[in-house]
Image (tube, rainbow over all chains, first blue to last red; front, side, top):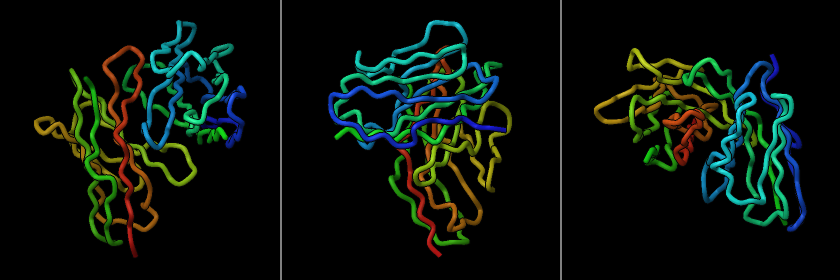
Length: 115
Length: 114
């Protein structure tokens, strides 16, 4: 079966521009996460969606970051007015919501470079 | 605070030798522990997890991990390393919250030399 997919795989942008990153979770997975992997910070949680519940945005580093999940499936992470410190790999993960024991499955990531 | 520590930035081992990648954790309550592997320019691949039960957990590609509650450790092991095991390995613990988000260690690069 298809895994988590993300697009684009690479994105190069200029400082100050807005970017959108897309995640398609595994079909039937109701929980979706965004993480960021950067050299200085390692792997850090950004945001979490579960069904129709309000998302947990506690990991978003600034108000320039936002995310939405339409129809309980596809998610888009938007970064406004990008800064060089936003350069990182953005990873999306999904898991079924049967219990907290379930495994998160990750997509291949989007490598964002802000010039 | 919940945290995961991987004390070694890099582990070097010869092909055919046993390997260990270390991980210690700090979490309130019962830990749910995970190991993931990342190959260059790829996402994270799930290797194995400990939820409850036997302390020795077996996973993909011949890897196993031993949960030690008294030492709060969850070291990853493999009896005989392959060159193709060379990658970046992450230990993670599920946060004690409703989200189930993962808290990751800093990662350990495993280098297996022929």
